[in-house]
Length: 309
Ligand SMILES: Cc1cc2nc3c(=O)[nH]c(=O)nc-3n(C[C@H](O)[C@H](O)[C@H](O)COP(=O)(O)OP(=O)(O)OC[C@H]3O[C@@H](n4cnc5c(N)ncnc54)[C@H](O)[C@@H]3O)c2cc1C
Image (tube, rainbow, N blue to C red):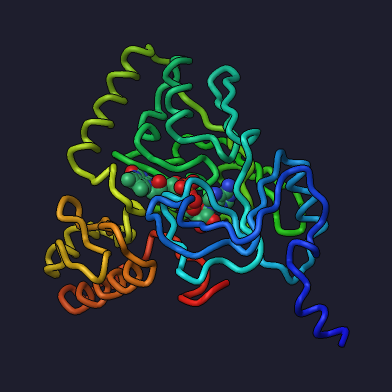
């Protein structure tokens, strides 16, 4: 009897009291660029670091926790995400300048960090202008573009482990590589300190405009997409391998390899997450057959297939 009651208990009733909000069954398709995927069993929006810490300290140990940012490098499977999905509230979007350093909350948009740096006359962050994610996701993914990446500008990041422990992690402790950081799986970046070099705002603005127009001409920036699907293998470009394997324009259901940039998958309107993932796996297979190279997903895939969470 007791066991049956426990099975039926709603997850939200087992979670600690917080100042932020819990919402059940929130469709994650609304929170990701691909616009696909099932619901979060519970979505938690902490109001600040203390709220997040209280949640992590008080959560039942068996409840899985997943952090999402702007959802620009994320494929949520159709069955949704069991457990608690965390998405930061507004307090985490702050951007502050201290001398040559910028302190950005985990939910600060990369573009806002780039614009703040420009206004403060700090060069070196122009590449963030066109990356459509948040700073937490940028640290996790070592976001980069046009020859620069987070690893080049990061001083330190603050992150919480799953037990509520707070860690300040220096750049040299993160072992950055192409679209990779050694940040422990599950850790949640609440803020980052990045550094720029003094320059004139007008020169910085001109370089940012260049970044912007290069991007517009080479990428489907307005499409429902997850950005680069696969990491560039050592010494090769993923898009060239995909093109050589004849996959440009290839489609499964509502998912299609972009005609403009063939390392991008597009949701043409009614794709499911399963369409997108199957198309990615088909491309990996064809590239392996034509070049012998194993492409590795850059897009993070979370949740469970089909059904419900
Ligand atoms: C049109 C388009 C263009 C893009 N161009 C580029 C580009 O030029 N360069 C580039 O590097 N990327 C690019 N991307 C991919 C994406 O913008 C980056 O990877 C970005 O850093 C992801 O940040 P996000 O906040 O959207 O993270 P999400 O997509 O929400 O999550 C990605 C991963 O980061 C984790 N994560 C998110 N927030 C946190 C946090 N606070 N703490 C710890 N982990 C976290 C998630 O759990 C997940 O594993 C592009 C995407 C699109 C759609």
